[in-house]
Amino acid sequence: MAKTSSPSSATDKAGLHPRNRHRLGYDFARLTKASPELAGFVKPSPAGTPSIDFANPRAVLALNRALLLADYGIRVWEFPEGFLCPPIPGRVDYLHVMADLLAENQPAGIPRGKGVRVLDVGVGASCIYPILGRAEYGWSFVGTDIDPTALAAARKIVHSNSLLHGFVELRHQTSRLQTFQNVTQPGEQFAFSLCNPPFHADAGDAAEGNLRKLRHLAGRTLPRDTPVVMNFGGRSSELISQGGEIGFATRMIAQSARLPSLCGWFSCLISKSEHLPAIESALKSAKVIEHRTIPMAQGQKKSRIVAWRF
Image (cartoon, rainbow, N blue to C red; front, side, top):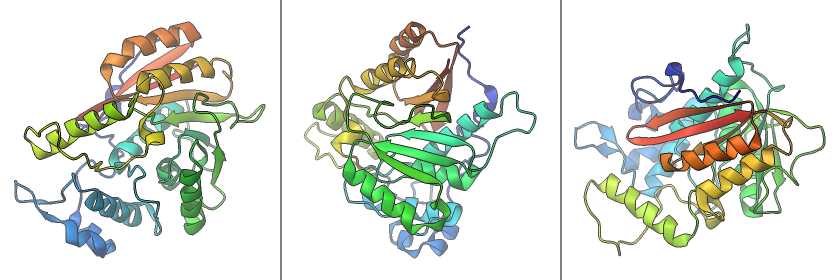
């Protein structure tokens, strides 16, 4: 029987998962010591504490590099300008939540090691989920993407960091409308799949969404003709999909029903709560035996993971 739950253990008072090493904020002294390039972007916040300008994509990139080096052992993290530079605390939270799902009814707790295989739908040029999942839990990953340039960048990251050698396989998805077909093999199985889907239906929607984000970061109203600079970057293949987030997620649910044994859990990150009724309807149509809607938060940013299984 399908059910929806919001485990109280999923997040702590700061909004991030209790195992998230970033839940108490950033130690900029430690991070700049590990990665001196970050120092040029650190300045006092309005409260007088060290911070960066999160509207500046170069500052965000420098912070991420410092975090990956200091906390996850990644020494080389390079990809072409314009690709998505993901917020690391939120990305690793997704993995911690899925680890909790895997641990349910397991006397030994969270399963770890290379034998736990994860399917990353839309791995991106940053290869961020395989990096974090390998560092935190020792899992192995198959990452798929429709963009050959993104895959080439991700391969360079894998080849340049010994932590990832033998733990990450990358596959090209040739269809924008397929999630699992073309990139999985008959009889193949994964502990779970994860996905951070394109949020927008077209370029205009993407620009308006980023302008809202910039207004929030600036703390004031900005004119509609304000130049849009993506602070976390993102190319069209990462931001835009037919039907936007809801179209992508509902297609993914329908396609998972055709391969119900592919993953122990299927999952997708959903940014907009108003999309949940349509997703609930898609899950019902797919005849899943169980589903969860698990809240996520990083500061004032709210989202949720929808996970389901057959």
